[in-house]
Length: 245
Image (cartoon, rainbow, N blue to C red):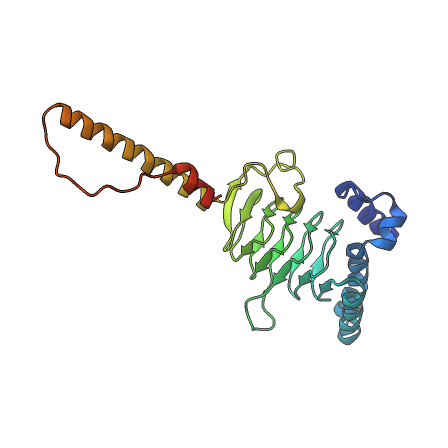
């Protein structure tokens, strides 16, 4: 037990620059306290003491602001940073070395008991603040879910998902060196794919407009008359790109 607690404390110190020492983490980090109390509640739940498990979970929610159902499976070295408002459902599974920020929900979309209603997070997954992961699917190892994303479908290992509903931004080979820790699931060049597509369409439309103007000038120089059409405002690519940033 104490070995696992030391691992949890060391992992928090590694991932949070604000953590100064083990005593501070043990006494002042609600994420660690919620994990410890969940282990008690989960033991009770799996040994037939259902009410006691729920009551310990209820006390943990009062003390920490983090609600973890005693039936949920939580791995080793899981770091719930800040933690207030985190909700983890009954059939959720959180793998080793995951990082979960405040306001995250690992929720279910089914009302059928006895089924896998909540998500499974693989090893090393990062779920940013306010993200909602809803459904009985799997988020692959070392994947990242951006802050405030609403994730409704599986994420491949090493990928990053952002947006509402969430879209895959990038997919990398599953390599811990190529997937360094990213606070709040923020990754370099992690733009929303829809924004990238819109910017590409805007640039393409601007180039087409320039080409048409060149064709009209060339036709007039050759003595070919074009039917007059009403003038319209030219596309301002800078202005439009700001709208989709």
